[in-house]
Length: 294
Image 1 (cartoon, rainbow, N blue to C red):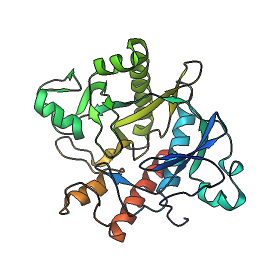
Image 2: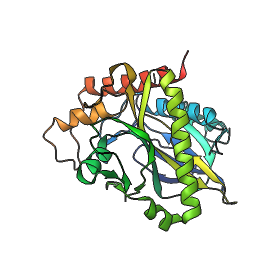
Image 3: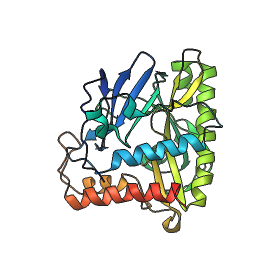
């Protein structure tokens, strides 16, 4: 495993921006180089300590799912080798952790699909009996499986702020009824097919968020990260129990550690002990191995 990369420094391409995890560079006018760093965020705060190898895991997992789900809809992949668009001295920064993708117009809505009730959805349900305006049966327990997967969008927040759960009418108003329906239907189909596959590998995908974009012809594409431990809740099926907060292969382990610290969830976050960083890295690696190997 290479040393952790907290931030890339590609100088041969124009830097367009840095997200919580990914750094984006322009490759001509129609493509982007996206570098998945080893940064990790929790409660919308980027931690000072990276998780070694995390960027490679996220990239490998997204590439796996894009191939597996390519029959459902187009995606951002170009097949261009990331090492071919940077200088020889910069190749180590992109090796195994970067992709060259189509430059799309992003849809500024988090397309969240849920099959289980947990996280902010559980809090909404306790308060209102619904999630994002979707009424649910009374008497559900924490982590219960829902009668069927539901689409529970969120409005993308400004950097450093929390995304806000919204109802489907919000999405219709933001992008139009026809496109909103296409996004909802795509998110639910992608989630359902991925969940069925993951179940064969002993993993429950409790929920996930997808990102979509449009090309110049208005064709809807799947983009950004797909079904990774950063964008999803992965639970081991053999230890799942409704009524409890299941163990996970995602960054919930890190969140739980942070919750035990005297921290008000504003920057700076507590520094991570080495063992917490390594255990988090191990959970990411195990998720990748379970889903993609054998």
